[in-house]
Length: 253
Ligand SMILES: O=C(CO)COP(=O)(O)O
Image (cartoon, rainbow, N blue to C red; front, top):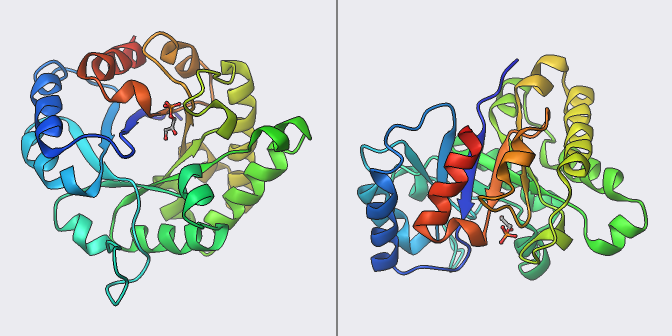
């Protein structure tokens, strides 16, 4: 089965509303005729509505970088799924390693967030990946497998098939040290095998699994040439309009 690649920018904690508007104006026309790839920008909460408006009529979808799992409630500082769908947001990153490391996200909260996102028809981009010491200890496969199984607990096959997993080795994030395309493919194939064990071959062949970690316009083609890599989750290189356009062009080559 052929899977349409998803290229998602993760802006992290960058850009004001004016900067987001500028970005949208710069990329919108450039990418109007692109086909064969899904384009996403995951932006800070404060810029989502501006981006949604500025990208209207384009093929670029807007995503958030986190959600709370409750419907609503006394959770100061948090944002509920319904508040995102209200804006027309389609995607949401869940369990990014920075959230696991700095904001106490666990495999359990990641699972609750995935369930909440799916309930509201948001497409989760679920992040998994090992740190350097785990890699050196030969635990990469077991870490990503545990994270994948936990994230998907209680999710039905039909819903699992529609979500996106991002394999992001922590040692490759923002370091300039990217995993080789062959290594990333091997880990991603293992994640796909885990999905096949949890569900069936059909679900495993439909689910999209991205690579993330120091992806740039110059190297994105190598990753997408691999059989199991279905796109990229990109931090730094998704911020400048030229670079974002370069990532998309590199992906459709
Ligand atoms: O964390 C990442 C995307 O979610 C990767 O960041 P960089 O592309 O800046 O390495």
